[in-house]
Every structure is written in structure tokens, then in C-alpha cells.
Length: 398
Ligand SMILES: Cc1ncc(COP(=O)(O)O)c(C=O)c1O
Image 1 (cartoon, protein in one colour):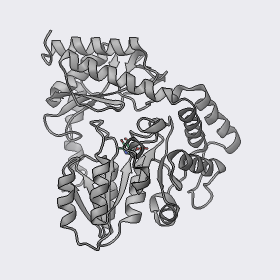
Image 2 (cartoon, rainbow, N blue to C red):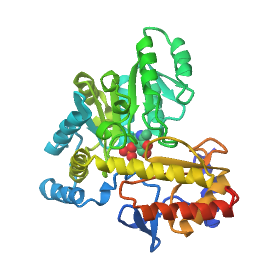
Image 3 (tube, protein in one colour):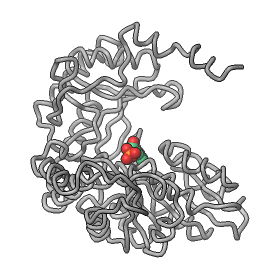
Image 4 (cartoon, rainbow, N blue to C red):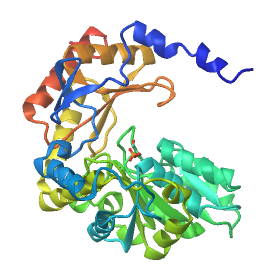
């Protein structure tokens, strides 16, 4: 069959659009952080990963503009060749000092970081061992390693007994990399990292934690999942992104210098792709300055998310518990979730509608996430609008 046939037959998105329920790819026309303009209308943003609200910070914007003046708009090459500027090296050093690791290596996105790190380390005969609810970039990294004749196995979500069962079946002397989200991107839950490290030690496995939703959000001064659990020295590798708390674009891996040095010289995702732009790196550096100087922003973010978790629960919604910036409200049915989303949007609140295959069947959700720059009036409006729509759709009682 012609491989374009499936594209021609794919009409689900068109049907949802025709019904006026399509939540995706909506262009933002102006972005102030907690409030954005979409289709000429101001709406409260409760679905962004701009956790500390730094995309709109004057110092972050100025740093990006200054970097363009000094270095131009792009690096036109990979880190390996002509694409390294002083700002890349500075950000690597600053992040390593902040995270308390020996070294940091930058990539152009978080997604590429997972591809680059996993496929460089896990080779023929080695194993990637992955949580069933890990982010798509980890799965892609594992599949890339599998293409290089590594093995890819999975364990039940955050279930350390199942992880141990999986490890028991792997040959003792095979190389093993356990990979997990630190804060799970959909549910906002923490990985059980201390127990994972015990199991990893027992079976001689290395651990890579993806802290995309944890850096700048959890742990001492926002130093992430390992810091939250007090196990920084026992955690082999941490990766992250600049696309969330750091108000920019790019990714990184943090760990021992011998390991980052190896990845740097063996990762096609790094060697054959252009380096992060000067403006992106400068923005991330300025954001890091603010994270270090103003840790109270993190307290405000968590207080905001806590207020919303408590508020939604009191209204009678089914909320997934955590102490992170992510507050998912389970709606259940996918069609109901799209209708729920549209009604929220019409009433001025923008959230993320997650439906299968992004989530399991009957676990469709409104994934809300918060910023340090949300004020009480934004949060109260979100709760009021959820209450109205929840009652109207029979999800909660009046
Ligand atoms: C857990 C996790 N890892 C990695 C990424 C990818 O990061 P980036 O946006 O920098 O590609 C994301 C972003 O959605 C994420 O949620």
C-alpha cells in the first residue's frame, strides 16, 4: 500500500476541528506569562511549563537581546565544530556548580538530550530499563539504542518491585541503564528515587533521571529530584531542559566529567546538530541567575500549585496528588475531555487536554500547571471556571 494512504485516511483531527473542540496548535499572539492572548482574547494560561514565569522577565529578555548583538542570531554549526561560543561553556560551568555535579554538557533540546545520552551510553548487548510512563524522548532514546542492537525493557510505573523483577532477568554482566522521569511529566508525581538507587546498586545498574519538570521546581533551591531526596551523590546522571523553568530552549546532561566527555565524542545528536542559539543560552543563563538569587519564586510556585490541588479537591474533582508544579484533573472519557477543554477556553482559561494515546484509555485529563507569577485572582478565576464547567458537565455536584 502507498505509504501516504494512511495520511489521507487520517481524519480524526479534522473531525475534532469541525466540532470546534480542537485544543492543539493554537497560536499565542502575545504572552505576558499568566495571561496570554489567543484569537484576540486574553485568557489565563494554566497549561504552560514556564514554572517561574521567567519568559517575561526583563533581565531574561535583555540577556537574549544582548547575546544577539554580540554573537548574532545563530551558531551555524554543531558544538563539535564551529558552533561553540563562550556562553555555552559558561552555562555548562554555572549549571554544574548549581547542581553540584562534576560536569554538564548542553544539547539543543531536552528531547535530543535523551536521544544523545541514551544511545551513546547503551550499546550492543546493553539494556535500557525504562518506566512505562516515561516521557516520549526517553522511549525514542531507548528505541535508538535498540536500533544499535541494545535491549529495551520496561517496568510498571514507579514500581520498584517490578523494576527489581526486570533486573533479575537481565544477565549479570550486561551494561544496564535505568531511565526515569524525576517528576513525571503527565501526572506530576515524583519517582521513588531512593529505592530505585538501592535496587540499581544491588544489580550494578546506572541511573539517568530526566528532571525536565523538576529543575528549578523541587529540591533545595530548585536543584531537582536527587536534591529533593538528598541523594545527589548517589545519582549517576541527571538530564533536563531549558524549555520550562529556564524560559528558553535547549537541554543538558549533568554527571561525572569522564561520562560527559565520552557522550560529547560519541553522540550523533550532539555532533551532527547545530548548537543552541546565543539568545537561548543567554536567556537560560539569566534565568539561572534569577533561580539562584530568588529561591522564593519556587516557594510561590509550589504554594500556588498546592492552593489549586486543595481547591480542585474541595470542589470534588479527581486530582492526582504531588507537590510539584503540575496538577492534573482526571476527566475520564476523551470526548468529554475535549468538550471540557472547549468550555474552559470559552470562559477564558487555557489548559492542556491530554487524551489517548498520550494517556491510558479513560484517563483523559485536564493537565494544569502553574507559575510563580500567577496571582490569587488568576487562581481563583481558574477554580471558579472549573467549578461552573464541572457542574455543567456532571463531573462534580453543585
Ligand atoms: C520529561 C520531559 N523530558 C524531556 C522533554 C523535552 O524537552 P524539550 O522541550 O527541551 O525538548 C520534556 C518536554 O516536554 C519533558 O516533559
